[in-house]
Each structure stands twice: as structure tokens, then as C-alpha cells.
Image 1 (cartoon, rainbow, N blue to C red):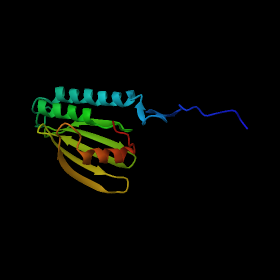
Image 2: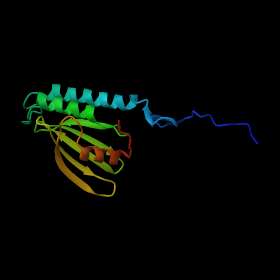
Image 3: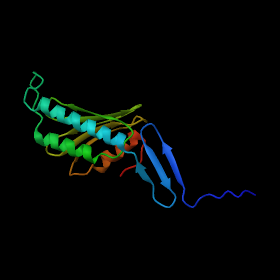
Image 4: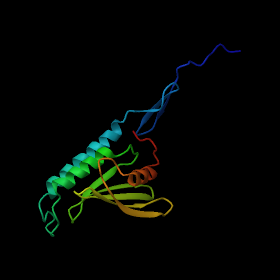
Length: 161
């Protein structure tokens, strides 16, 4: 019989290319090392600011595009702050009608969200099984549950702070 005894306090680590987790058997699961996700949020935020600076005047594309307003920029920034932890990188872009768009792609699934200064979020999603969904929600500071759930479906990542 071995004299080895498991310690009462044990930590299990899982490290992927993007995230680190640990589980202390005496505590709930905690997310550690969110720096990669925070970097992704910072990059999206920087991209949104770049878009606003480049597109805040009407006709920014020399084809009659509407200006991106400061309200649209602020709503997009708040949306980025409200994003759950994702294992996919998002992209931001300007639209000709004065909106800021986001897109997330992973394998054969995709989601796009268009942001208006009024807080209206228009979304479209194609899931892996071919299901297509679309609609709109009003952004009030926290990410609407439909959009949050669809993003988590695409990312296959269930942790949310």
C-alpha cells in the first residue's frame, strides 16, 4: 500500500492557445489569464476609434456614405465592453449608411451585428447546422441575451464573467 495521499488542496490547470484556467477543488472555477481576450477587446476598440476618425464626415467613401456619429461610436464601444469571453476574434467595419458593424467567423458559422447610435443592434447569424437567424435588439448597456447566446454558440466557449 502506498503512502501517497492526495493533498486536500489541489489545482488542476488547463492551458490552450488562448486561455488558461485553474480549478481549486475548494472554490468555484475561475478564469485566469484573460489577457488574450482583453487584447482582442482592445484591438476592436482601437479599430472602432479608427473607423470613427476616418468616417465621421459625410461622403467618407467618395460615394455618398453617411457619417458615423459619435453616438454610434459610443454605442459600439459599449458593446465591445459588454462582450463575453470568446475564443474567436471579431472584426469591425463601417457601413455606407452610418453604422458600425462587427463580424465573428469560426469554421462554417458566422455572426454579424450592426450598431446604430440609437442603440439598435441588427444581427444575422448562420450556424454550423445551416440554421439562419436574424433580428434586432436594443442595446441598454448589457449585451442582449439573444446576441450573447448566438456568439457563444459560434465560439463553442461557455465561460462568461
